[in-house]
Length: 208
Image (cartoon, rainbow, N blue to C red; front, side, top):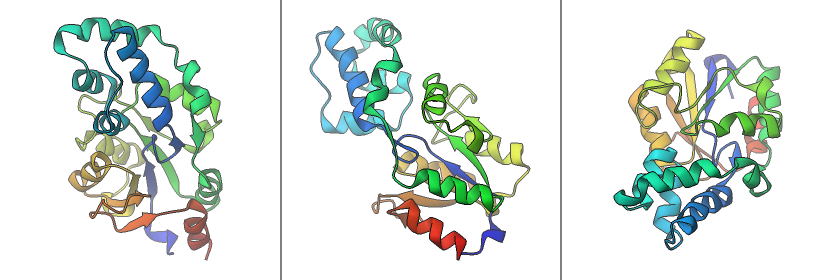
């Protein structure tokens, strides 16, 4: 693979850097439990996996309970959920490969305050600059603002940057900002030019 064409790679967080669906499920079901509401169904689980907390609460909680839901969310320490999170297999090898080859890396996530805890827990700070969360933009993904933020930070051309994601939100973000999109373990994302099954495979491609 020709590294020279890439100025940088943008990573989504949940489902791409980390395996966090169980943690997200636990978080939102704890909120629902505090409101005496039933646990999420599979469609709701998929939704909260790739949207901001405010968007997710609006989706899974009746409007008249939103204030209580926000209070319940604020009472939960995300540190309780760390045992439910793991790094994706091969991601550290891939990040090291990119670093060796001078390819810049960024994070573009709809997480907010919890992203810092993820970076600390898995010692990821040195790999990414910038890290863009929903707190850094007025319009989070799938709006292109977050990718434009990164391109401006890098002074990079969108034709020389890749966005790796695992959801339609990431796919739409890439398309609307004009960057190449690679899907991570989701062959349903037909706008992707590559579907990554194992980061170790793509690391070998970069090195060859």
